[in-house]
Amino acid sequence: MFNFDSFDIKLETEFVGRNFIYCDEINSTNSDLLANKKLYKKSGTVLFAEKQLKGKGRKDRTWQSAKGLNLTLSILLAKDIVAELNINQLNLAASLTVALAIENLYQLRTELKWPNDVLINSKKVAGILIETTVKGSKIERVVVGFGINLNQIVFQGDFNYPPTSLKLESKVNIDRELVLAEVLNTFEELLMKMQEQPESILEEWRNKCKMIGDKITITDGEKSTSGTFYDIDDNGYLLLKRNNVIEKIHFGDVSLI
Ligand code: BTN
Image (cartoon, rainbow, N blue to C red; front, top):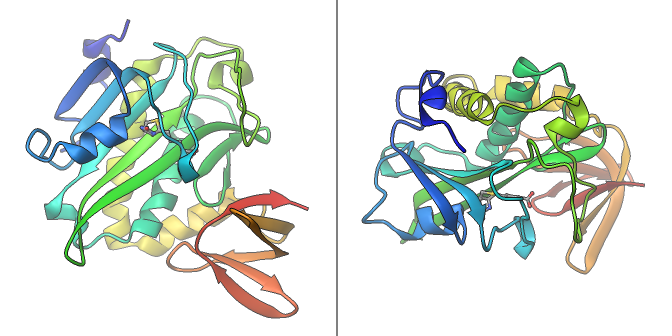
């Protein structure tokens, strides 16, 4: 069972996670938080579920996570914050959050895979799904959904990337309350940093992305393009070098050639 007191005592944030909603089962923390405008208003509201019945991954995939073993949660960013927000940078900040939290707590080296997967030993330990609602031409609400595999040791089904968990990689039981608090503490810190020194987020992200400089293929639906992973730009887009021309890539799955 989730121990709320043990989590709360470690939470050091001003606003992220201060409004905390715990659910046993829900379709998707992202969908529920995004849709219920009247119920969830405050930036930093966290919706946490022990089990998602329709957990969503990027590109209409599903996110499968065993009940009570991992972390599946979403953080709401509402009007007061979103006006200034660069969503692509937020993607990088969210994956960097998970990587830093894991490295601060456990002796494990993490790697980031564009746009926002967190890997350990070339296997996926966490994924991020950011969704927004817009009013007119303006972004109104943003939810940042985190799926982080902690204590699950058996993974069944189809995965676009081999999955792993912190327990599989570290061989110890993982303290969910501790990881959750560390993720929320780090997320708030990086959110502030994004406003003051966005270049430092980009730099830290680059340092953890080992694929930069490698030959890669980017797949987006039916379309795939190959070249060298040149860099990420200030907006977090991938820069692909092909025949000495640099092309900006907005979406897609990266794989090594
Ligand atoms: C991916 O790697 O494809 C992204 C996975 C994101 C999963 C999380 S779990 C909490 C939140 N609610 C969802 O339905 N999805 C995200």
